[in-house]
Amino acid sequence: MDKHSKKAFSDEPAAALRKWKAAMARFDAAAPDEAKIVALEVEAARRRYIFLLEQRRTEQ
Image 1: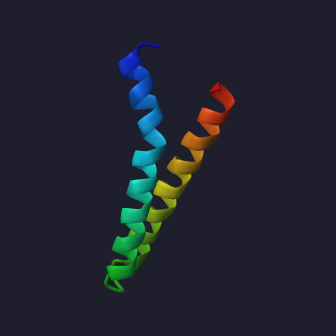
Image 2: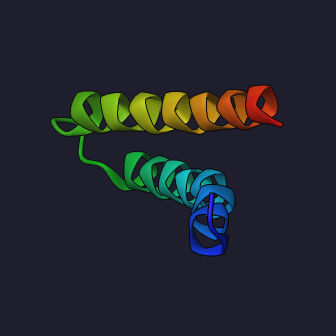
């Protein structure tokens, strides 16, 4: 893995966490008819973040 790849790999969980937090903020501001869709986005972002953390733990 080259230097650039390692940097991108290390930034992935941080980026996923930002996306999860952004999705939670959208959920807080969502209209009632949008809430279900945004809730799915929140869950997907949460799962991606957890997946990346677990992947990092197993590869170290």
